[in-house]
Amino acid sequence: MPFFQRTHGITILALALLTALCVWLGRKGDSEQRRKIRRTLGWILLINEVLWHVWAWHNHYWSLQSMLPLHMCSVMVWLNAWMLLTDNLSYYPFAYFLGIGGAIQALITPDTGLYDFPHFRYWQTFISHGTLVAVGVYLTWGEGYRPTWKGLRQVLVYTLIYAVPVFFINFWVQGNYLFLRHKPTAPTLIDFLGPWPLYILPLLLIAFVVFGLMYLPWGIAGYFAKQKQS
Picture 1 (cartoon, rainbow, N blue to C red):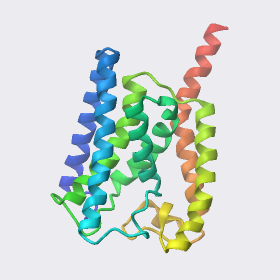
Picture 2 (spheres, rainbow, N blue to C red; picture 1 turned 90 degrees about the horizontal axis):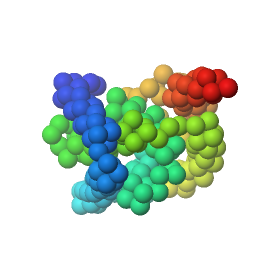
Picture 3 (tube, rainbow, N blue to C red; picture 1 turned 135 degrees about the vertical axis):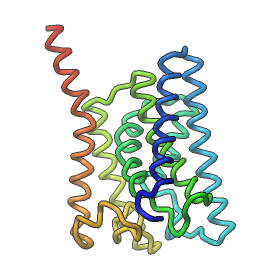
Picture 4 (spheres, one colour; picture 1 turned 180 degrees about the vertical axis):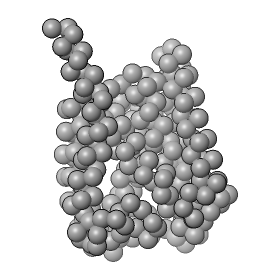
């Protein structure tokens, strides 16, 4: 789709307003209200992802090369859906760092293929990534969960470990999961990082810097809170 056309901007604004509504309802409501919001977000992620696979299969688009749930946002869709529907919120650090950090880039430079508004693929892409961002934002500002240094390290370590088998799976199925085999076909920020495989290292470094910046305000706030108590 053309980069940041009017419908793109309106869609992002609508997603931001819906996310703000979730945060407001979460802060205003009781534990049962918050549980309903988590359930709603979880079902949206799950149903949207299942419909995406059904559509891809029906339209002869589904393949091992592109549809295995190995891209980071795909992993986060399933992990967040499971986390929200089972109330197992120990995976919150992944929802915050990978959900928000990864999905925002996908919202800015969405890969909808040849399909534009109002095609199903357009809506599926924005609902998926928009909800990933909403989950991290909602749990942080709606329910009061906070990223920690321990959580940041956990996310970084598991992300690196996860990337190793995915790198080899790409060559086995001729895929490009995590964009470790070549750059995305759609314009993205990766285009500025050089050719394959040179862009992989700066891509990882940028991810680590982004995660660090996402943690920084909470780290500073925690430091001054400890200073005040001492």
